[in-house]
Length: 141
Image 1 (cartoon, one colour):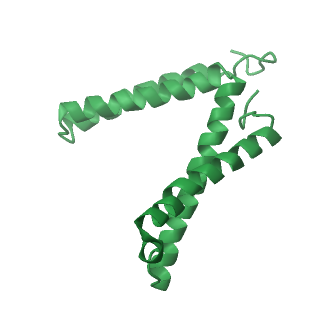
Image 2: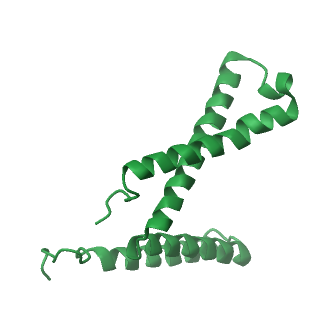
Image 3: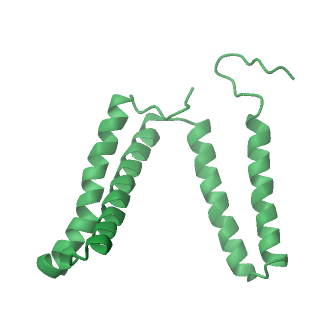
């Protein structure tokens, strides 16, 4: 098998990678059920969710589209910003001993600051970054 591929074709390790991912997932389900004695419904649910995520990842790589890439940039921007605000705010509250925003903004104000605003701001940031990169994912052909 040649290691030099034509432009636009998949690298030599592409098919073995996905086969290894699927076999590893199945093996982890078998180990979870037989060796760790996890309930069968929990193992099957975990395998189904894992196969769903693998399928989404495979679809993103095999059938790239501008709409899917834009949705990914927006989603990753929103989740990334929420992660920074939520855990950064929790870190500041725990280290300084300050009361949480719900103490002086009320439950609705704290909900907006920690759950609504980061998603909206992050979605705009993700879309802006995606636009600058022409909605091309990293390591895309």
